[in-house]
Each structure stands twice: as C-alpha cells, then as structure tokens.
Image 1 (tube, rainbow, N blue to C red):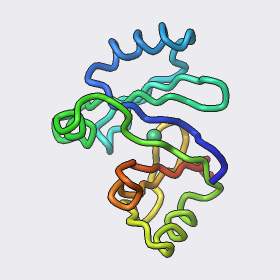
Image 2: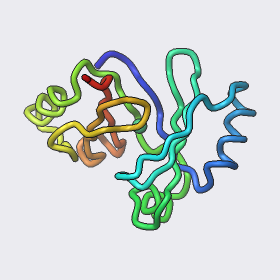
Image 3: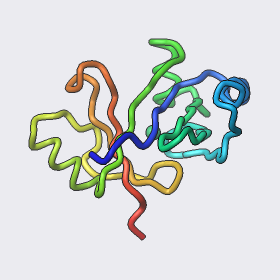
Length: 134
Ligand code: ZN
C-alpha cells in the first residue's frame, strides 16, 4: 500500500453534499462522474495528497442506496493506492482477507479498483486503487 488515495463518503444527495464539502474544504469539486455499472454518481475533491469521494446512488438497487438505508450517510470506504490492483487482490486473498472482487474493475477517476470485505477488516470496506494500465 502506498498511502491513502481517497476516502469515500456515502451521501443521499450529491448536489447538497457537494455544496457542504466545498464549504467545508474551501475547494470546489474537480470532477463529477457517473459510474453506470455501480449505480453511483461520484464527486471528487482534492485535500492535500488525499481525495474525498462523495458517492450517491443513481438507482435504488445500488450498493450505496443499500448502505444508506442500513447505516445512514457516512464514511463508506477507505481507498489505498497500490501499484497493481489485480496483484494486490490476489495477495490480500492469499493473506486470508475476503476480497469482494476477484479481478480489478473500472472505477471512477481513471482507476482500476477492487474491494476487501469489511468483515475481514474490522468493519471497514477497503478499496485498492491503481492507475488504469492502458
Ligand atoms: Zn472509492
């Protein structure tokens, strides 16, 4: 792991949350991106070396909609920078962590991502995140 890439926050309304975080952080969101396959709209802020990723559901069966229904708004995941998401998924799997994804998938912001289940990390959903290879 090469540091924290971003912190993902589940929000009910992307417009309202974007305003709140722009006010809080003193910077505007630099990118808004829909990830159709995940049923989410994301909005990114830069704070020093770390990013804040706001996530709102775009459809009722999205993982973010389910998360908010169950736990309310709040921190959804911590994303760590890795060199190669596929290799990291394999390695963490071999170390006994429960990986949610067998292979890296396309994430927002030109990243390849994969998740480790919170049941193997004391309740925190962990994302591993590397730059897209192509
Ligand atoms: Zn993320």
